[in-house]
Length: 199
Image (cartoon, rainbow, N blue to C red; front, side, top):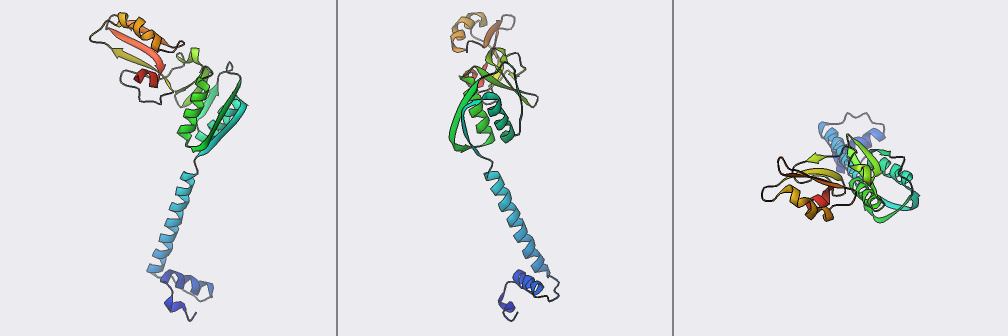
């Protein structure tokens, strides 16, 4: 206790307390403890945020099992269509955020003709041919969703007939997705992936 006079105030208070000496922490001591507690909380919070990354290593794993794992990591609610069967290989060694993991799952499923359709807080895993019927986003401006999401967009044309543009654009749209012309207001209605609609 003879060396306490050289200690910082916060440590001095703790040393007195440990030595059994009754001590009422001064205002500066309480401030020091409060600052240390705050810094520890911020450090733990930053560490938790930094840990929200995952590497993916699924080899010939049932699609349902992969979806369950991604659902647990992302915190999203998934419903898998009973017609979606088969296995999936998805291996990514670099750590991914929840959004990146969801994008990787979507890209892998898309190669097997399966699509993620997000609507009303639920992600449906459905065959691509039926995805346009599952209530995805409809918009008239440029797509603001992830590029791998299926959306319906309305294009209002000014300088060309919408009917004439259907055969020109049809080859650029995925076979299971649709394009149609509305002659009354010269518009095209296209359902396709957001990245293809941007293109």
